[in-house]
Image (tube, rainbow, N blue to C red):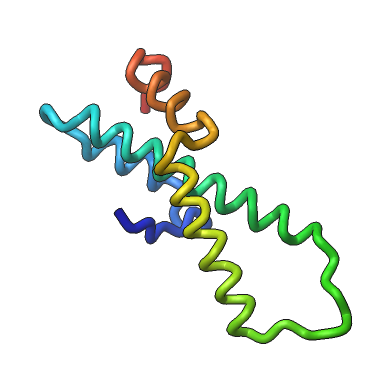
Length: 103
């Protein structure tokens, strides 16, 4: 599933996705939404971490290289959350499933 979400322009995207769930597929859809959220969170975290690394002044990065690095971070985040992730998706899933979080 593609993650074409810009949290800065629409911070209520998770709430909208949760409200759209219904029927027997609710559990699988809930798990998928939680994994998407974890992927977005990881991508934001990795991008902020990358900003702390000083750039070498010897060779200036091209626009293409910057775009590639951004895309790499996005794909890396998706792959991490597809596997076991870091536990955020599972924690969110349990919170929603047990009714601790409501809209």
